[in-house]
Structures are given as structure tokens and as C-alpha cells.
Image (cartoon, rainbow, N blue to C red; front, side, top):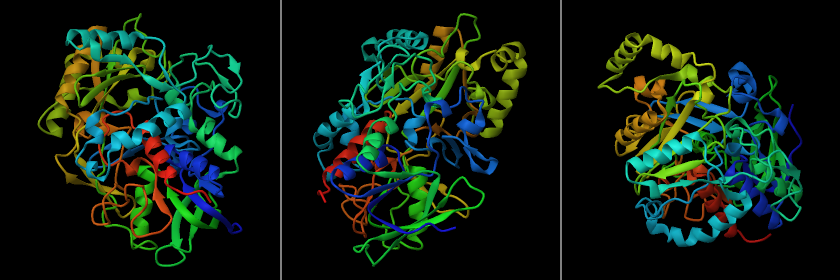
Length: 521
């Protein structure tokens, strides 16, 4: 079945931080806007109570799972991402820091502008729109991290996080506290720790409660469970507009549609925008830069866990990320939590060991478990894994990059510049051991990290980077795609240097800047 063709001024592909910001600002400028989102739309009661409810939590269409969390394995990196109306804001950990100076002055894009100065007002706008507030309380994991900071002589570099959460009074619903009554009612955070499996209490400032909510109110349209598979220019450079072709992403019988538009904004995130651009470069959009897929960054991350099976150990209370330790100018460590009962990740954990190759590490894992069967039995079969486990996220501002290329069935990764990203970051392992000592716990890592050395990231970035021209990048400094008119990229794939911290605020600020360059209709 094919839907009736409609005409818009802008079609936005994806509803994450870039897509939602674009929808509001373009609608305010008088444009007729349509947002197309692959994932589903969620109300608070639709979110799962724990991540064992895979059908509601996990995005895995082959098994008919249409949740909002996606796990993707590649040769060089494992990627955690979000799917749904609101994009990554549904599953992210609410944390909104401004990167350090090194990010703005990175050689990969510094020559294109004075980024710290240019982005400063847009960071402030993004903070206001996303409702940034300082986390008001410490949890067990924060006290332990503070203890580590003191032990290494860096207590002054420990601080509570700036987060997109409405604190108010726990579980008390009040009229819109952010937009002079134009936004939805909100309820105060009850510190249940469930931010990353979907906030069931209207406390998390997801995009469907700010940018996207206001955009819809002003006339923007959103269609969910629809995946764009083709963008066809009406002339060589798209000056006359485009035809956007989409199909159902959740139905057995694929409903299809075509839409005419004068402009396009790609906002599907790295895992949505890059495969589409790589495909279209070989078909409908041959003028795209040859740099599509280059400059992909993992934020140089390492995800480790510490499990403490003591009766008094509780790491599940609070918000998803409540504090941060700036270990040096390039590195940061954050405690991350899931709510009590959400122990799915225990199935993928292994001892945090190192070795020269995968075979040695595998033998070490077996040796460690067989040598200490009681200890590891307690860790694997602890009654409430999320309650007894503190996840630790280590990030760095280092410009190692990958290349994503079109494969037979999906994208494949190759090395671009620098060394291959690794799960074995000595500083991260050292700090996690200190944290484990502080809570009388045991360090763990994802099995894919311990055995194969493949790092995991929740912040995949780049691949449609900025450049002075088509030979250097996919987009210019104002996010406009080289080779086509009225076409922009506004999502994580536009990030052209490693922020080294959670990137959502930066994606928002860069998109605010890009939209400010577009004239009113």
C-alpha cells in the first residue's frame, strides 16, 4: 500500500537531539516540517519496569522486539544507541556537560571557526531548553568515587553532574515548569535509577517533553515506525527539491510512502544517517563527498562494572549518572546505574582481565572462575545484580578514528587514523580497581571487551564530519551537505572531534547554531 504524496518545506529524518531541535527551530521560522522516525512513540506507562522485559526495552526487529534500546556489534566497536520518538534521549543518562577546551581546539576542525566562542550562546540555549539542573544528592557510588578522588589527590576534580531532570518534589505533578505553561505537566524525580530504561514518572527531560513537544504544538508533524530508504533529488543538486521514500519499520506488510520536500535534514544518528548516506552515494546522491563514513569516533570509552554482593551494598538508587571525576584534562570517570531488578547485563559480564590475545584472555577467564568458584558464583548469581553493581564509564578526548563503509548487509568498520580503539585503557582499569577496593567489590567487564578487546561506546560520533570543502568533509561548518542544496546533517555524525564527555548537549548546541543560519521563510 502506498500513501498519498504530500509536500513539505523540510523533512527531518530522525527525532533525536539534532532532529528535534531542527523541527522546533524550522517550524518557528515558518516552514512546514515533517519528522520521520524509525522507532515507536512512548508514553511513560509504555516503558518497561526492568530491562528483563526485552520486548519493550530492546530494538531487535528480527525477533519482533521493538523497544527503544539498540545494541550493535562491529569489528572494532560495540555500540549502544536509542530508537524511538525522542531518539537517544529516551535511553541516555541525562548528563549534559560542556566539553573541555581541547575539544574546541582539536586540529580536526579548529581551522573552521572559533568554536568555543561561537557555540557558547548555543550551549546556554540548549541548557535552558533541556532543563539542565545540578544533581542535588549523593549516592553510595558517588561517595565511593569521591573517596577514590581523595586517594589520588584529586578531590577538587570531583563534582556532581549537570543533568536533564526535573527534580521538584518526588512524584508530585505540577504544571509545566520550563516554558511558561506551553510545555507538558511534569512530575518530580523519585531517584529510582531507571533513567536508561525509560522514565515512567515524567521526570526525565526527554525531547518529546521540550523541543519536539513544542515543535508539534507549533505545527510540525511526526510519523513514527517509518524508515527512510531513499532520497531522490528532483534535479542534479536538489535545487528543485527532493522525493523522500519511506516504508514501515515494524509491520510484516510494509506500507510505503513518498513525500516531496524542498529541504532535508539527516538526523538519524551515526547508525541511521551513515548507512543511509553510504547507500545513497552509490545510487540517488552520487555527488556526496567521498568522505562519508570517515572520522568516526568512539569517544575513547571503556565501560566496566564493580559488583559488591554485600547485604548493605546499594548502587541502584539515584539518577543514571550522578557525579563525575575529571582525572586529567583529557579523561573523565562517571558512575552509571540501572534500577533495582534490571540485571540483564549480568548475562554479558566476565572478569576484567587482560592478555596478549583472545585465546590467552579466554584461558585466564576460565582459570579465574575455576580458581575462585565461590566468589564468582556469588557475583553471577547475586539476587539483584543492578542493585549490587556500579557501572563505571571512562571517557577520553583522543582523536583516534574509524571508517564506516557499506557492507553486503550492513556497515563494516575499518581503521581510519591512529591506533585501533581498545577496551584495555590502563588508567580506566587502575581507577576501577581503586573503586572496587573502596566498596569491597570485584571488577567486571563485558565479555566482548575481555575476550575480544572490542570497546563499547554509548557515544558513537562522526562519519559526516565538517570540512572546508568536499575533499575534506561531508558538510561545511554550517552543517550544509557539500554537493546538494537545502540538505543538512544535524546529529552525532556531524561531530568532528572527540568531546571526551557525554555529547548530547554538544549535538544540541551545534544544531541550534546550524538552525540559526537558516533564514525565515
